[in-house]
Image (cartoon, rainbow, N blue to C red):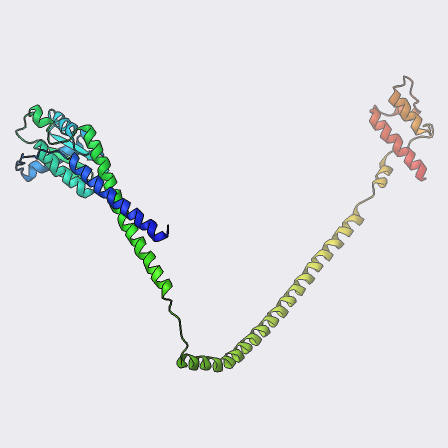
Length: 327
């Protein structure tokens, strides 16, 4: 199947479905026509304002969903009006125009007064001045559908809306496809004329002038670029010299500080000189200390010296040995 045949097949199928849904919707409508006429009471502006304000503040409401108006909706409204003067009817899944139609139908079936339609989805109704609860035939009128039939009606109505939106799209696609086919069969070829050739010759004569102008512009741009590059090179050279001066000054300062700092070996000269009675073999003395010998080798100065720790004595002896080796 070609693309055109597919679209034609879908279009025929959609039209058949539209006819089938329309007939089903007409069959499900109630057979008995409503002979009741609605003669609403006349309210003064003050009464209308008072009841409207009361209706906006009241919390009791009746929802109207996808089923629309059926017997249960009318019955609920009368049950609310048994204790309240005003009532809200919240309508969902309907357009503002359909909400107005529902409000008129509810006023006709219930005998109430429509005060206002708030926010395009809330109908505020007043029961009337001399309201009395009607009999069951009026509270559940036969002209309305039952719950199940109302649901079937909503399904048929939604399907019919979808099909009626789908058919124009198919017709538009078919027209576009046929227009494309007509353009492919009759292509428009461009035949060169003498005027076109003259225009082309004029363009070719103007090309050398344009080329010379472009060369001049290119040369000017190259000169500007070279000047800019020379300026940048000079700036970089000056910055590098400044940086080298900074590093040189820092290095000189560091060398001066190092020269001023004394050597660690010179610090050992500050320690007192040990006497000749100290043992020359420093390793044996350290070994005795580490092994925990009970009779360590001591000198006279160690006895006369103040009480030092073992660590202090080790450092003092090491300093004296180093001083002897240097001398």
